[in-house]
Length: 427
Image (cartoon, helix red, strand yellow):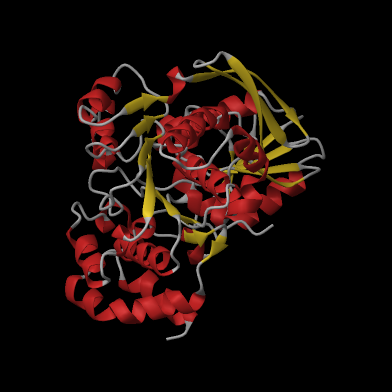
């Protein structure tokens, strides 16, 4: 098979959560274990960091990867979903995996695919572990796909586990209380392995404390806090106080969303825990890496500026907590008028998200080109109940073109609501 034929096979032969939703979710680790056993258990052949959470796990994973790369370590990074290119899921030092490897891996594993009928995600997890082992990475950062306890990535014994936060998402699969959702995320905690918790709330702390009874646990927000921030030349400049020594340290991030300040506290504590294990990551390395996360790792879609006059921002925020952060960011952003290009998927809390969006804007309702996408007309109808008005468009680029045509040079055009929608933007 050619590379394109291989992708077609992977996308159409295997159940894919991003396309089908819950129907593609396998609630056990059996297939992943079988796949990795057939490959010689590559997940045991390199050191790993495991990152879960409702929001922020992608940004946190990329920031840690940038830091480890800057420190001189050959760093693998597995994330999902991809925006443009399937190979974005599997990178080493910011470089996507080889097309030839994807073809070769798929051909090698095809007999087992036919036998056990794995999901798309199960295959990509095994593919990542195999690539990182063959490339002999020093460490690989592994982002959880969904949940934690039953996620395909949860067959590793990492150097460190990280849980960024707990919020409302995937309740149909993870539970309809924050305690239940936290229990699923906490499933990545391993006996004796340090774990860093980013944000914690009263409902979730007892869950983490209980699960980590036999593991060193650290709450990032209790170790450091932000005392100031400002924007300058598209960088977010943040001042942090470290409780251990009461010293002030300044960091610059090229991920400008104000919500990144919470992820930064998580990243700093994770880096500290790695330092304690002997990884050579000092403050200077961190300060050198964070202004260049996008360049070093290829991260996109986090309050990403892609056009000026009018300003066009892409953000993959898609659930209640993510939209709450976007709403806060809008309050901090200067613009004359707001245009929102939005599309969502059917299995999200659509009404709860729409309730958070500003009424003083023009909306351009659209949909990603996947089966899970909520029909644009239905989204428009639901939005009307929240006094959000606008027309519908069959796909995101037509919606964005119209928004940019209607916008004045000092207006803001925001594209949000779905990772898949942002991934389809061509600008």
